[in-house]
Length: 357
Image 1 (cartoon, rainbow, N blue to C red):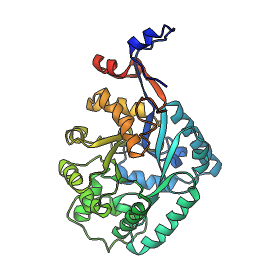
Image 2 (tube, one colour):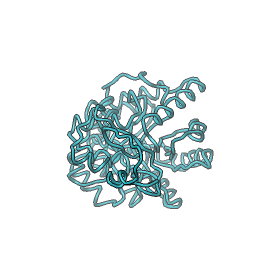
Image 3 (tube, helix red, strand yellow):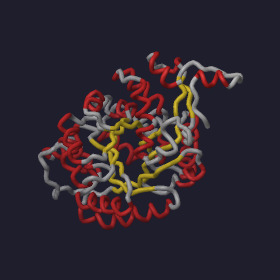
Image 4 (cartoon, one colour):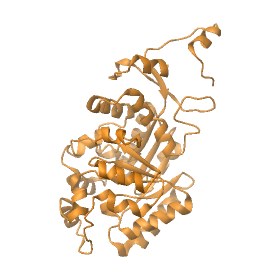
């Protein structure tokens, strides 16, 4: 493949078809839950994260054939929506068949969940078994969220990642309840633990926000922070001081679906952090479409198209360590090509179109 200027194309003296819009690399969905695809439109919107988690626990079970069919359908629609790679969360091995046959590149993040420190070793043994079941597909063991992973389990996950030179992903600061739990052991998560029948009397508040409480456990490991809905400037500055290998994933449509709010995108841009985009799951979104996430951010946060494009392509490719093949249109790469037409809902500045076409 060659990348040519308009003048060089004219010199070829060939018939050329021109399109209005922007030809861009294939999209990278850096955060998805393919396993939950059968839950499309099953959970009410805008109930808040605590109630959402309760609904997932209560409703995620279904007929195995139905779950598999929904995953195949979601995978095909992501491909049709121009997605070429996905960082996908899994709690079991049910998605392996879909990923193995897919035209999309998947990296599976196998979630470890366990807030009781006494269970840390047993939980790690369990998720190691799932990772082994996913072989030879690429996968790594990751923490689910700060409120479901003990410091002891965080330590085991970090050691595992260091040994395998792996990158990890973690849900971060999706709701004010998460910060309240760590700051003073209050908020809606107390009801969630009660719902789960968990005794958390061992837990003591740190007096710090969630991010400032857990991030030191992973040290300098390359990490994707997902959602960041209520992350404040002090959190972002703290994170940058702690770890130079952080990426910040935004899933705006899921944030609106669950909490009816969006992260402070201006703050993240001001602090010049690496941003990627994700869709979350069909339990928290009406579609798995990175272009729709971009449009949502431009409409609600007035982010320039060129910035959104880097978040949707090269930044995600860099995090998933696929940037030698994907993420930009360059000689030697096979990134896939998408045509974004002006009717898609974007405001594309004329100088940006010149750079991209």
